[in-house]
Length: 98
Image (cartoon, rainbow, N blue to C red):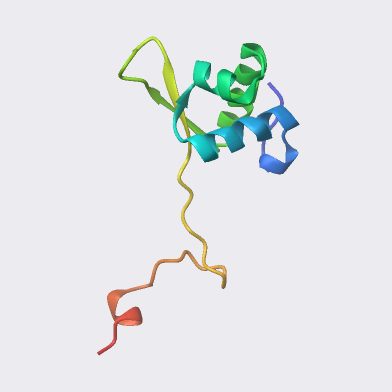
């Protein structure tokens, strides 16, 4: 496998970006559902999911409706405020002074 340090979504091939967008718009999906939505081949979707998983953008979980399949979703990133902060107040007193 190639080195993925410092790699982000902009460095990935177009197929991986498409899979990311399908997951972004349609929520958690199985690989088969991603193939249907994206109209990419199963092999291409597998590769895209592997690349997205390598950079920590996609999570793989058990699909309880059919345990033979996995459910893929975009990992939840911590919100970033416009000032570069985490979006969360440092303490209750910082935001809610009476």
